[in-house]
Length: 206
Image (tube, rainbow, N blue to C red; front, side, top):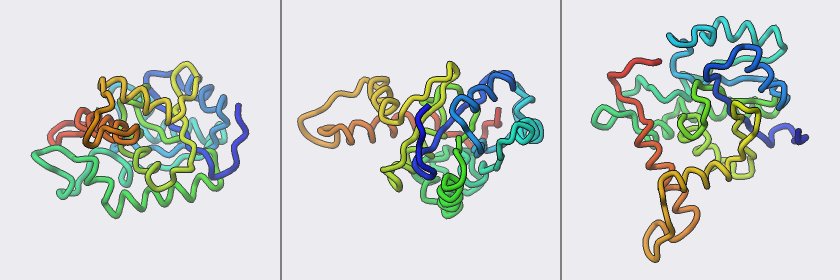
C-alpha cells in the first residue's frame, strides 16, 4: 500500500454485489477513511443493503466517514439545461454550478481524509464516477493521483484506465485532426463512453 500525502490521491470504488464484509475489506486494503456517495439516488432495488441509511451505518461503525454528493455529482439531473433530446449530457452537467460546488467539497475533503467516490458499477469504465467526475477532476487538478479500486482489490491508476478506454473504442492515432495526440485520443474515448452512459430522462434509477 503506497503512502500518499493528504490531498494528493483520490480513490473510486463500486459497491457492485459485494457483501458488506467484502466491501469493507476493499476499503481497509486501501486505508479509505471516507466515502463520497455519488449515486444520484442512494437506493437500489437490487442491492438494498447499499441503501443510504444501511451503508452509512455500516461505514460509521467501521470508523469510515460518509457523505452523500449525489445531488452535486450524480449523473441523473433535475436541471433542464443538462438535457439534449432527452439525454443528460455530461459536458453540460460538468458546467453546472452545483456540480462545481460538489468538486470543491471533494477537494476540501481529500485534504483531511483518504476519500473514495462510491457508485454501483464494479468496473469504473462503465460508471459516471470515472467518465464524468474523474474526467473533470483531472482537468482541474492534473497533479492529483486517481486510483480505481476493483473487486479483486487491485487499484487501477487513471492513466491505465485511460489507455484501456482508448483500446475499448479501437481508437488509433491519425495524421490530421483531433486524434493526432494521445490526449486527443483520450478525449475522444471519454466522449464516446459518455454517449453510451448518459442517462435518459425517462429511465428509473436502479
